[in-house]
Length: 295
Length: 296
Image (tube, rainbow over all chains, first blue to last red; front, side, top):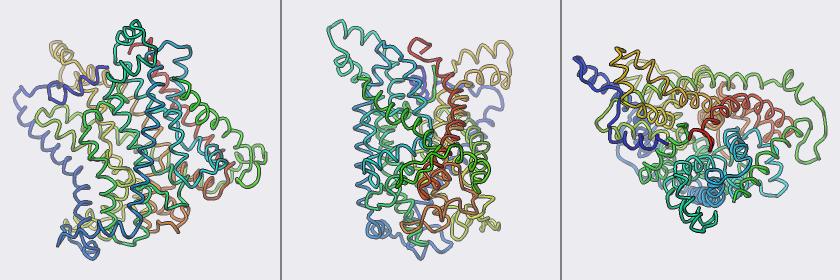
């Protein structure tokens, strides 16, 4: 897959359609960078305002001032005492952690078979994976809800966690695309050396596909961390089982116009995601590119 | 090794798809067994349901406006970024960062930023002597406000466009230039053909995402109405202001999971499936290009 090479080489700023050589190119350069800077300010401004507001007292958020005077960290403490925020964070960590662990256990082997083993109906199975991945969750939610309610698991997050033991369509898709970039000769050589398919997967493919597996893991974790529709369907009646993103959606209304504390919770929900991103930036960008660049 | 995943596809994908069609011909509220009522759910859907038309139109509005606006903006920024040689990683991170923010958090943030009373946006407009509008509290501006947010979080399609733009071999531009092609012609005959497949992918997945638009609208309604919380029923704030944010999937949720008319919700789901399937088929034809014995 050429996209990976390009996205990394591009990071060093090599390729590009035009080099500023002609006369007037300096003016074009200035115009482009002015536009870029303006847009960048617009893109960063929301985060800055949210951060500033999270440090304002509740009285100050009702005034016209945009800068905290004085800086007040109490919103962050208040967030934990006014709602069971600690518990919601725990729920989210457990939910996203189990989803990711279960997904990796089931989806890595499945993706390996689809990418590297010659089996019948491989294309048909892959087509089904793509349809399952892209189909809106609302299309199948009624029968699934009925199924989980018969099992007595509605009111909890288990209906969102357990299916990952049997593979997750998006992760299988992403991992397969990554495995395809590994030359088949490595797998063939390992087979000649007497490895079974599981041996080939664990000894050859997994070590070579660490970035792809990491990307799938991060996506799956974020997907669960950010999920709103799933918890709404299965756990909305049961605040003790809410993940933190769902709790945030419910937070503001129950706290009137206390924007300061609401923004503090907004920051708290966002920061873990951003930290993970900065540690795994390159893996992440490669993963996104793999989902969109074809052939 | 494939067996668990096959089982998963059967239980969590094939079975519910089939069962959903069956439930759509029944009346079912979870307490009593499903009762066969033939096509009554469908006749109700198409002739009597008071809100389904509004909901479907709101969703189609998002398909028609949100998808192209996001793609054009993402392409524009990717086009600028491809030419920024210095600190390219810095620029990319800035434009990608918003896409990382959990959707619930971005909606809460945007409703705050644009809130008519004390929001920074209207505050800044006031400094310029402009009376800011009601944004998320105005039925005619609520959806456009969500489009602005959609542009803010466009980072992932932008990254895909950027990778594709960087992928164009420079020789092709040089060859075109030697043949006497000007800037516009180079874009027309080199960039666009190269970008084509990625663009098709972005449009189709964008449409499918817009068809299931739920979280952003639901959270915007509940936060902007100021009436979320455990005690507030979902349907009380739904679509606020004035049903302008009532999407098709939200309506499906209300009928199925607030009113527990699961048979009727299944009929709404069948219709959603039929519409989505058209776009899925278009996409599947594209995916044939990179099956194991194909190009990739």
